Length: 163
Image 1: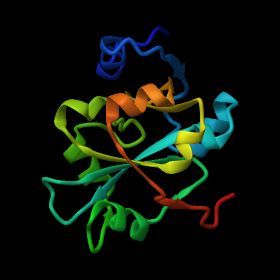
Image 2: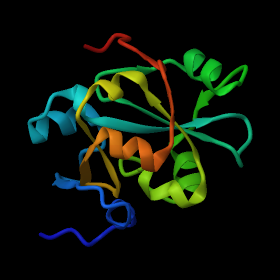
Image 3: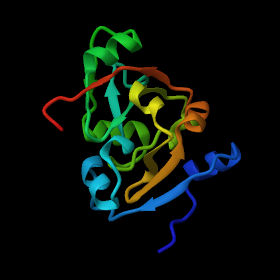
């Protein structure tokens, strides 16, 4: 089934950025499961996390690799906050207008969200991230993605208990 063109794809096309559409079952909402399902290493699949700053008008987006865990203290330091918490799914969906498992920074560029991306992403040629709809990811060159998103690049994750 062909995916209809999403705003994230239109944005990339406006900037002449090549991308590859990766489709997968929309029942997969976990980045590690996605990496396994489409046969790519977890360090190439980036999940978009919505972070609560305590001000519902100013939540943040954090992009980290599938196998990493967000370190809220590191993110708070990078973002200039004393304390941050993960947004509950309902809040994340309300604030972004997107369903969890399909939240994409590319779909939110026009809304001027503050985006943070984990530093290891800059060592890659390309990453996969949500297209803004469950079941659709985009493989995008990282340097081009950085130019469009204009994120803050910082060490914001750790290995946690995951591999």
